[in-house]
Structure formats: C-alpha cells, structure tokens
Image (cartoon, rainbow, N blue to C red):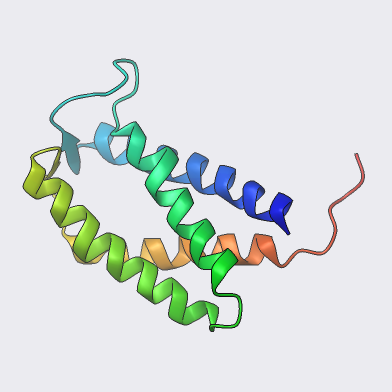
Amino acid sequence: MTDRIMYVGFYIMAISTLLDILGDQIGIWHYRFHVILTLPTYFPWDVTLMPVSVMILLQFFPKINPWFKAIFFALLTSYIAEPFFDWLGIYEPNAWHYSYSVPIQILLFMSAFWLTQRTKFSPL
C-alpha cells in the first residue's frame, strides 16, 4: 500500500504544480513572491501540503466513503487554505473565487483515490 500512496503523492505534486502554473500564467491568480525564481507558483504548497493532506486522508481513514473525504478535502483547501494564503498576502486571486476550486479539488482527490485502487500495472 505504501508504494501506491507514494505514487499518488507524486501524482498530486505533478497535477497541482501544473494547474498552479497554468492559473498563474493565465492570470486568474498571482503569487506576490516566488520561492524558486524559475517557477511562477508557490511551490511549497504544491509539493508538500497538497500531496501530504491527500496521502493522510487516503492512508489513515480507509473505511470512510471516498466521496466524503473528497468533499472534506475540497472544502478544507478551498475555504480554509486558500483564504489563509490570501490573508497572509502570498496568494492573490484576480479572476478566481474560492468556490471554483471545490470541484477541481474533488476531481483531484477522486482521481488519486482511483489510483490507489488499482491492483496491477502494465508490465515494463
């Protein structure tokens, strides 16, 4: 199970970084400073908080309905984490409302859950 959780963590890192870069480049949100100058995102959020929170929900609460966990994750990230980073002055939503993130976060979590349920991969 650990290898699948790590696989999901890397998946969440890649997708959240990609979506973050796209949103920043399109101009629907902006970060006031860059941790890594070559990346136009708040990289620590994409590679630590997002994947770790998904991995914790998947690992420690396996009996809870994944849709409930996905909704909890989406509401937590959309209505607590995003406003917190906005309040800190790190994140500036230009043409983005927190509610827009909810379905994206649900899809992100459910796709990660689907990856953990795979029983075998194609041979190399």
